[in-house]
Length: 373
Image 1: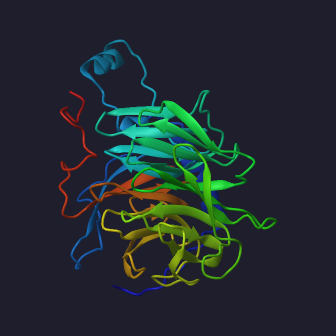
Image 2: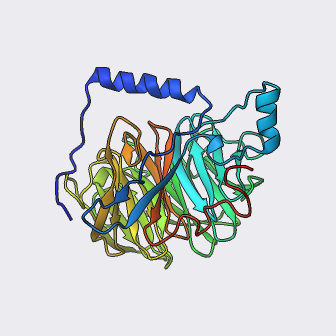
């Protein structure tokens, strides 16, 4: 792999302001993101053999909702206008069976892009289960959606369609819950307590995912093994191994299912395998680890032992595929598709494994004409 520095790019203030104005104006429209012209980008680039292919971007409700013949008639004959909803400030993402759940801290909801169901749903807008600042999100094998709310200091739990089920945590325990992860059996919930400069509450809490009972507190503030400095997000591998982004220590820490420390990887720097501002994290069915770095504008892929395999993306002002300004959350679905959130461009980029056909897997429209006919 080309070992070039992954140095963050600094843009002039005027350019940043122009980009921001463009993004704000774009968000007011109702048109979906334009498709990529020509062949989709592949990663790594030629002459290396491709491992991932850019597939699509999710930004608007129109990216999944279908226009029926009746809809087209009303739009054309009756002059009706079709309004699309859009992401405003996405942060976390979790995917199950083609349903893409995205936390939006500005809109105070979880946006559900149901690809096989061809529908868009907003979760958490009303009581019970109302959200104020949704951050981390995960979906269990039992079909339950767990969302951390940093303002309310709770974790809200919903079913796959967004029906409220229960609330876990609370202000007596949680202070700044930023990330959540559920073990493979759906029985244990791990909540990342980010803490701050004025508190030593830099932990990962382990709860019973059903009753909400606090079972264990993992870690404390510090720089040693098993200690944290501004932990942000967490992900659990298929074997139950817990991986935590330790942002302030520029590393990822790994723990055994019982909460005991296993190992750590990463270091501060600007080269592949190092971190400048690690944020989101995910694992795939093979146990590989995906880490978003906001400063680099990319995500790096490591094997289960923390050895770097490759990276995808770079900082860019266009919002094009794999171009990022503020990448945040990431998830990998059952088929190996990767979903990456960018807060600045208000999008979720989707990448497909090179060995998976576009019409294969969960994230496709089932039994319908994809054009909406």
